Image (spheres, protein in one colour):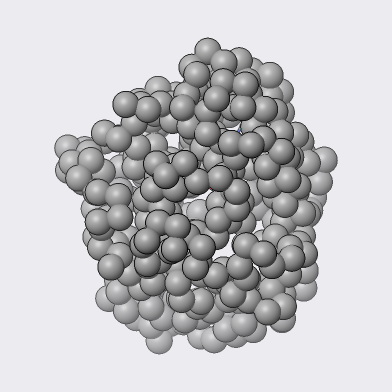
Length: 323
Ligand SMILES: NC(=O)c1ccc[n+]([C@@H]2O[C@H](COP(=O)([O-])OP(=O)(O)OC[C@H]3O[C@@H](n4cnc5c(N)ncnc54)[C@H](OP(=O)(O)O)[C@@H]3O)[C@@H](O)[C@H]2O)c1
């Protein structure tokens, strides 16, 4: 069995990765600090990437075959208010981890973002020119560049939704929580993405890693949806009241990173490389609903129930419910 080391192991995607990797690989989660509420990883190690030398030591000792680098200063607000920290974690730590991966011959997978594009046109393919609209997008793009300095790097540009340990990290959780409580919510009609269900994203990353993919890949759902359309689809799939979602425009927001945009990704390269169609967002929502009693419960209760474990282990890459 290969060993996967996942940074940001306590975060939204990192925790999903830990669960996905159960039964598929030895998994080692790097976290800034132990949460005390359990981890999805078989082994968890503390390392603060502000001092990346500790993480590099862990890499050198564990000698994983794959490093999945999920850790980041991931909120636009945090990057705008502390650009030096964003640079330190999103760029410098990435550079050092990519180097360490190269030194031990591990595959380095850097999780990047659709926010490297300005959103003027949408349906961006891997040859499109990035033009970030925020400190977050800029530092993530620089992170791509330093990762790609290493020959074995894979950059996955994406956007995802799903279940998270906090229960509050994703757009699905925002709409699910609000609509379940019967609250009226805004759905932006002019912010368009190709968000992908997090467990589907892990299946896609696993497949790319198995096929030793290098370079930049756009991994996302095939259908662009506005946040409003996503909310309506989520309400439908989860049997919630879609009349609580009212359409509004991002341009009423004063924040630069929240302006009207279409940052949807073209996934043709992924599809032809893996010979797999990308899922639709509705297929992702349907999978998320099926996972609500397993993946969601596990991530949020910090315990691996027998059902969740069986569900994680039986989910076969690229044979799931997405096509
Ligand atoms: N969410 C999305 O839709 C989306 C879209 C495109 C790309 N991405 C990218 O996907 C990756 C994962 O995102 P996510 O949504 O899972 O973010 P997240 O939930 O915020 O997770 C990021 C993780 O990074 C860790 N981290 C931050 N600073 C650290 C430090 N100094 N030392 C050690 N760990 C540190 C955080 O630990 P703490 O919890 O201790 O802070 C957290 O566990 C990121 O690279 C992000 O840029 C996300």
